[in-house]
Each structure stands twice: as structure tokens, then as C-alpha cells.
Length: 564
Image (cartoon, rainbow, N blue to C red; front, side, top):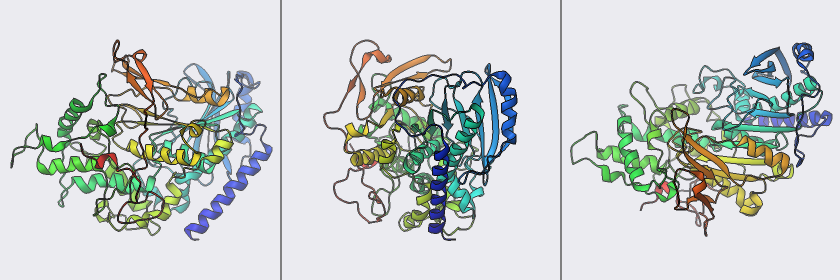
């Protein structure tokens, strides 16, 4: 079966299954709901759960057309003082999942937890959320088992598995979870939410685009929404530029602090953070060692070039950007260690390792040799080879009209110092959404973006990486109150907040008012720029399909390509 035919059949089956399940639902999952809602566990008690929970393993869930499901185990378990019915099973062919059903005081919410990397394991890791004890929480493995989220071998000649990882797995487990919940509690979830970061962020956007009625609210963080260009090109770039022909790394991790300190000395604000990376113009050449020398406190000319190319991002021989927004942001340098620049004893850094796995096993319609590597990928001629599989993996459709009409709400967020997935790409995507929705005011009725100063990839870094997006998302969905700000803090090793900032919906930003400590949120005010930045960045495929040698007119140079 051809790729096009396979995709067509998969989409028809998914649509048919979704409609069949929806016809028996007791509560439509995509309706617009504005009233505040609380509930108990729909009549389930610990005593009754002791019978109802194990009975789930005997229930036949194989009749769902789009999501034939088998329960392998269902048993009561105690976690953090709460009792749950823990359900494990799989949706055909091999999308394994774990669903935790609270016995006491279920709030009638379903929370789906996204996965990261290539996934391969079921992990109930809720990110950037408050207390989720009363939610029914589910996670899955994206349709395959892997010992590591860097393992892509499972995808070799496995188109169904690639489709599961690309977009199907979350959808079918959502269908299955709602049916299991209905069987256990006697009612469907009133509200359904998705929370994910990195590949989980891509999964959330994919749901909003392909299955707009699956979730009432979606929190999507640091998303790798343009997967085929990100993995093969943007992350593969890290190996291409930083290794000699003999395989020796040029820029060592020992010199990243040098680069980082120079950037922060130049661009940090009163709170010690770089809040506007695009406005910070790095000058690595200022760190150049005297001619013919090398040292711990300077960069060789070859190392200067690598740093410049990390900021610039992937380009072709004409100097045209191959990824929207270009390279990594100023302020991310200390985060390059292990992700972009190998540390001693590591081998390849994460980005390069991921790129090689992706290119070998997922990127092309014609599978290359398992020994294929980034070094064989031609950044000038091979981009078109990524296009067809990108139809499976990319969550790049900016048309969220169906999600909006279904009453869905989306909170996007991205770390301003992300060293793995450039925040400029998310700004580009949000710009595309805004253009189609009819402007920022129309967009913010259903989708809001929060940029997080100083946060690395999904957390960590010197910035304010501790915050809760689930609570404001539920208030937006259930009460009709959109998030006007989110409080974010930086915690030290003792768990104490050392910096706190309000995050405002983009394009607004927090500005220190000049009074009191710049480390405290109450001393910041919301500012709306007189002329918001145009994030319609120039790149080779900016309008979806062209691989022209020069960027089109009326686009914005990528921040990494600009010089002071």
C-alpha cells in the first residue's frame, strides 16, 4: 500500500471511529462549557471500586472501530494517600497506556499526559501543572516499546508505527480512556485536557489540528511542531557544524560558560535574565584567541564559527534559513552542554543523536541504510525528500478554526532560552495562526502564547521555569475566564523562589517598573509593544512546499541571522 493510500485509510477509520464513539457518549467532549463545575466520583466508593475496578479487565473494549482496546490489568492502588483504579492495557496494534482513575472525589476531568522524544514508555509525568489528584490521568507509549526516548529503531520499515507516533496514538487512547471512564464511573468525562511539552507539545497541537473535539483544553509547551525540519535539519545541523571530517568535536562543552557569561553581561536585565533574546545580538568574535593560540578563556577561529552557526541555525549554500526563526536564542548557551555540544564521555550530543535516528528510521519514504547519518544528508538538495513523511509528523497546520468552533482553548508556551527547540519557531507558528484567525484579538479568544524568560527546554535554566498552566486552562474552559497572566518562579536547590515574574499573553511582556526588587513579580507591569514584532520569518519553505533558493519578499530575517 502506498503512503498516500495508507494515510487516507487511516484518516477514514479514525473519523468513523470517532463518530461511532461520539454517538454513544453521554457528554460531548467538544462542547462549549462556561459554568464552574465540581463533582464527586459519580457514586463510586472504595467499597464498590474494589469490585468495579478489577471488573474492567473482564470488560470487552475491542468493539471500538478506531480503537480496539484490551485491558491487561485493573487493580486498586494507593498513591500519595489517594486511592486509584490503575488500568493498564493497549489499543491495537500496540499503543500501551496507563489510566489512573481516582476513587475519591473525581472532578470529572480527564487529563492526558504527553510524551517526549520518540517516547516508547508509559510515563505519567505531568508538567507545569498544579494538583492533579482528582483528575483521571492517562499516558501512553506512542505505539511502540523503546528502552530510550532516543531509540528510533522501532520505526524501521514500520509505517503503522510511524503513524501511531506521528498522530494516531494520542487520539485512539483518548477514545479508549473515555469509554473506560464511562464504564467505571457510569459517565463520560465532563471536560478533557491535554498537557505536554516537547514532543508532547507537538502531540497537543496535532490533536487541535486533526481531532479538534478530543480535548476541551490543550497546554502545549516547547513544541517540535515542525518535526521533519527540526530533527533532520535544525538538530542535524549541530553535528554538521561542530565536527571535523575525522569526527573530532570543534567546540568543547568546557567553553560554553565563557560564551554564556559574555552574552549575559551584554543583554541581561535587572533580574539577571535575558527577556528579549531576539533583541540581543551575540558577538562571538569578540572572544577570539590571539592568532594561532587556544585557551580556556577564549575561542579559536573555528570555535567562533561554530558558535555563530549555532545562533544562525541551518542554512543552505545561498545562506537561506532552513528552519523558521533560524538557530538557538541568546541566553541558551549553558544549556547546549549534552544537548547540542557533547560533554566528555558522551559520544554525540542529544540533538545529533536524535537527528541520526530520525534520518535512518523515520524521515524518508524510501528507507536508507541503518548506517545512514547526518553527514550523508545534503542540506542543499535533500530537503524535498522529507516532505511526504512530514505529512505524518508535522503539526504545522495553523488553521485551528474547527478547534475554536468546538469551544477548545489552547495555551502555548515556550522557554525563551530553549537550547533544543528554538522558541522562534513557535513564534512563527503562532504568527501563522494569528494571520488565519484574523488578528491577535480574535486569536486570543481561543489560543494564547506565553514566552518564559530564561527557561531551557521544558524546564530548568536560569529563568522562571516553575509555573502552572493547567489551572488557568481549566478556568478558561470551565469558567470562561481567559488567562491574563501566569505567575512563574525560579526555584533554587532548596526549593526557594529566588525570582518571580508574571507571564503575559504574547505579544505583551513584563517590564520592571523601577521600584522595589526586580526579583519580585509585584514590581512588574504589563506592556503591549506599540508595534509587535513580525515573526513571519524568512526560510526556504515558509509557504509550505517551495524549496526556492532565495526567500520570498515581505518576510522577516531570522533573529540568528541578524547582526548588531
